[in-house]
Length: 189
Image 1 (cartoon, rainbow, N blue to C red):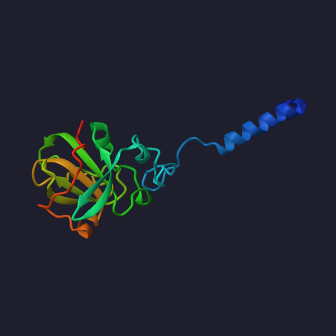
Image 2 (cartoon, one colour):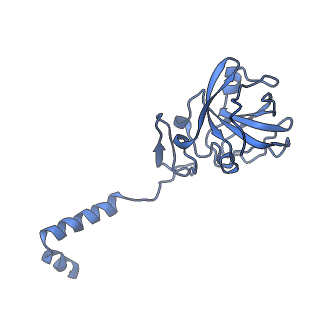
């Protein structure tokens, strides 16, 4: 009752400010909504129409893009060339974020042993994980299942990994022994 009496005594400007404040409280919920898979429903849109989760540290719109070539197919790819970027990888991305022929290339400063390989923590999309030797030749292709933290090892020591939507490797004819053209400027830091 006391609040109602105080509201009646406020001037027109004060009432308008109070109403704006209440509307802001109701409509401006700053916390992201959770989906069934635990990913954020709030997104960030990039210059080329890509949308990704606010949970990402490295948004697609901010990453360097290059074009790889595999079996005469162009593969636009985001470059993941630092430890922090390689740790995040394709986490939290959904189908609409990544086109069928796009990928993410991981470049490591040092050659990595066969295992541990990659796993799918916080990764919503099923992926082809394509391990590449220091000579940029395909070693093997692993299929990652969403949210599966099982180690998916390489067949031999690797220095690059290409991740694409699952089924892309088969569709593009990417198989062990073939070379993938990666610009020499792509190096792990």
